[in-house]
Amino acid sequence: MSDEHRLTELDSGVRIVTEAMPSVRSVALGFWIGTGSAAETEAHAGLSHLVEHMLFRGTERFASVEIDQLFDGMGADLNAGTGKETTSVHSRVLDVHLPRAFDAVADMVWRPAMDGELLEVERQIVLEEIAMYDDDPQDKVFDALGGAVFGDHPLGRPVIGRAEVVAGTSAEGLAAFHRSRYVPSNVVISAAGSVDHDALVEMARAAEAAGTAPDAPAPVLDTPDMSTARLAFIEDDTEQYHLTLGAPGITRFDDRRFALRVLDNILGGTSSSRLFQAVRERDGLAYSVYSFQSLYARAGQVGLYLGTRPDNVVRAMAVVAEELDRFRADPASAEELERSKENVKGRIVLSLESTTARMNRLGASVLGDVPLLSVDELIDRIDAVTIEDVRDLARELLAPERLSAAGVGPDEGVFRDALGPINEALAVAA
Image (cartoon, rainbow, N blue to C red; front, side):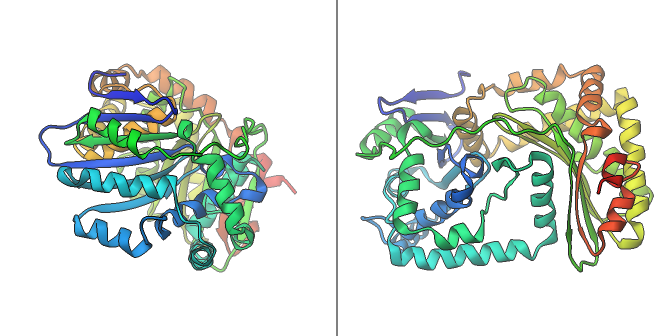
């Protein structure tokens, strides 16, 4: 733990981590819960997301409208999000309002009402959200890629869940799911800004929920089998083909994650990156083209996305194949490496001028058991990345036989024909 942060663990297992920023008058507060779509069985697919919605539907002490009025009256933000491995509820308030905000958020997290009538309304909202995502080809193509890379493992399922699960879960079943995940040992409270650590610890101790032992332990899922590259295609009458490539990556505990961030920047993470310059700026084959990385506890993913018109699919994928071949052979010049490292360092430092960004880093790191490095330590790790580090990662992670593909568009044959230069096995697969 860096000297910049303070961490306390209560007897119950709740962890409180803070970072004081004396120059500001606000506090970013977050409750981080170790549950997300990757910890769901098939029968529970989407319940983490549905629970997140229900937290805002009120508690025994606060009706939903009272929560809205409370935070509006403080001029405060209140929001939440569900991911593959975490759920977070977060707020940003003036420091004088922190006790009131903490009291309300803690009640939402520990004691949501889970009322049957309220659930009927909220499930309709979530079903509308699922329908909205189903209408968006960019969302659909990434869901398809997840299934191609991770197979039938929960990491390959959409975070938003399945409509049939959302529609069919009872209030009692959702309450049981909440009790099995929202337990003290699975919760981290993080705050950054004008915050007193000891005072926040006392707030957490006072707000601890009684009787929050789980009904049954949450499932511990195996590492996904990612040994086979797969192809997924969703036929849709779109103006563009939405095309993705993906491969198994590294976990969030892998020390090579710093080199991977530099690699991602060079390949497709910036406007000066190789993919952006070749596909968009030189050949005009796409408006949107970029690479990405995702790191989880037991697995990871690397990949890229582009959207292009039907006439350009074959040519665009040929350009991508050429750039991947060149990247594996020669991933960075000295100038590219330096520019990428400075970009990564700049983004880290600039983002950490935000109380919310610092709170997010604290909560996600402690909940995910990732060491909380100081800014200077992060910069040192980035500076230590060499061309050889990037080359070794590129050749391992982006090897052609490891690349899965997913697409959304009018004709699977067009997509499959374009994959020959990328991974010939996918192009010829039945």
